[in-house]
Image 1 (cartoon, rainbow, N blue to C red):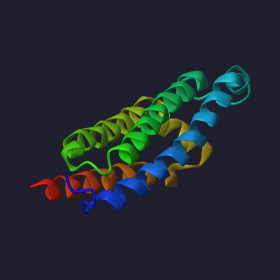
Image 2: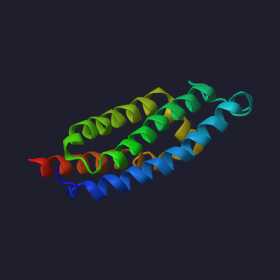
Image 3: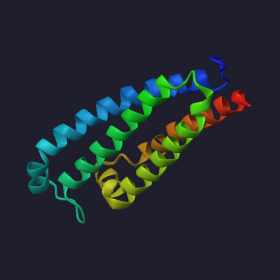
Length: 138
């Protein structure tokens, strides 16, 4: 077991970023779910309710919070690289599902479409760090 794997620092940095950003977005999601009825009456979205949007937001970022914690915990263990890579791939699928089922519509409505690519950068960096860690094991 090599505790100085090539992807160790990348996994730690991305894990910390995930924990911070996911924590903030979970709070936004909880606040949004609490005020979703008000948003639906003031500014309704055409095809999805605000409660659905904030519920999906909460689920995706709860998963990425878990992913960030796992990245920090397992960054020193190259044998966990495959597990971390799968977590990264699942997060990409989760983001795609989020945007297909209402997130893109809400982002357009709120004028935040420019933030969408950022949701795909961290999982890619996470996967790269996991794969570099896996190479250390070989």
